Image 1 (cartoon, one colour):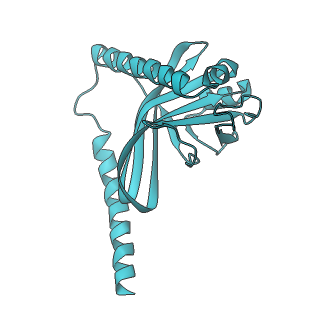
Image 2: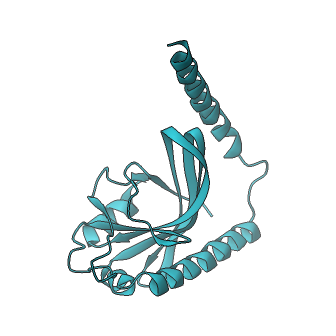
Image 3: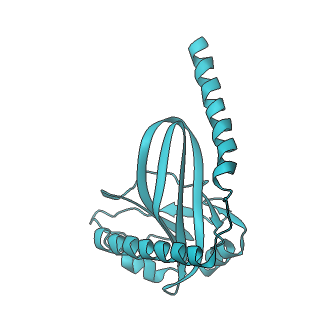
Length: 195
């Protein structure tokens, strides 16, 4: 019983400490200049290009699914780490009609049995104009809070079945091994970057 209380207290302390430190890490020491922002945008765009190319080559049917979408939000490198309390974060870009129209950050927190770190790419496909407009019109967006969000699944033939992808927002999660099929993205927060 005492061990359980100690674990709960430690988890609560980690959560409070993590939240307190989050404010310290998001406050820049000096304002970003135009050159720094341009460099960040170029870096994100290059990573988005590489992620889309990797997805097209490893996930059959993904190119067709992207072509059917109204917009694609790509987070090329989302770092997930934790020990009892975990979190993930990464930067990405929204593309509409093949062009970048904005830069975003994704983040989420979780509590539970977890240890270690991993990197993954998350691709949100806005399949309806309404879902895309809702996303672009929001100050902050959470997966699953508004439009229905569904994880893309592979069919028996090893390809994405574009005819069954009917949710307004489809999500592809890629690891180094390929498509990740058993992951929850509900509650993942997305906010616009000012770069």
